[in-house]
Length: 99
Image (cartoon, rainbow, N blue to C red; front, side, top):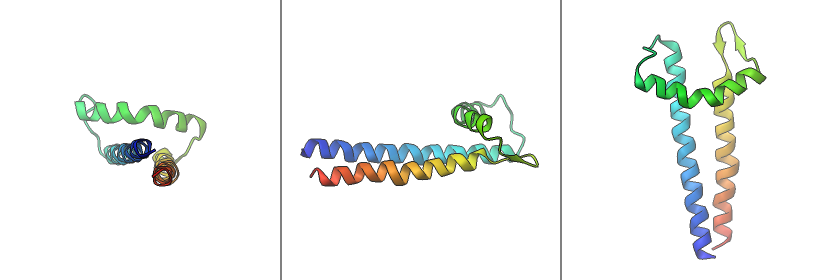
């Protein structure tokens, strides 16, 4: 059980790190929406390519735009926080109980 516990603990850490990185990419996407970036810049293309698959379904199902302000990144932030508090915490708790 020690090996499984370590594996689940490591998985929780990796999931937490991926969610944190994605949150910062989403922050960069929000900041880019405030300025007029070069759409052919590879960094801008990467940020749009990584975030658009998550933002597009939210925009399609919940048209959250008030006065030209897109509120779908807020939904993504809430989902990331939920996943960190629920999934990561559950994995960490499971890893502790298996020791």
